[in-house]
Amino acid sequence: MEKLNTGHEDSRLRSRFTSWLATVLRRAKIDYVRQQERQVKTVSMEDVSEDQLATEDSFAVQQSEFEFEEERLAKAFFSLSLQRQKVLRMLFVDEMKPEEIAKVLHCSVNYVHKVKQRALQSLRKMLEGREDTL
Image (cartoon, rainbow, N blue to C red):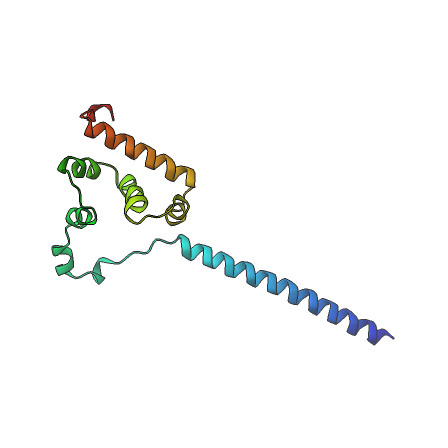
């Protein structure tokens, strides 16, 4: 009779351990995926050739993404902060939704809306000749 209880107890402990282990592994996988999503992809300077560094002018690359009708608009756009430029580019060139941008930038949707609003206000002020009020 004693052996039956021990065998039953062993199988119960084994099933509890198996459930616990499955939960721990699932949570570890989720944590790993989240950590990988948060990491910023970088390229070491050793991996970039000198030719690439010499020929890529960041201003020219940025400017080629937009085809501005007015030089004033181009100057105003490039005087915005990089964050504001990035949000406007994603909204109007890449035609992404604010929710998608928030995921890419790891921020809230409300933040995306605020950056868009402030960037457009700044552009309006600059184009109206009120740069000093920024």
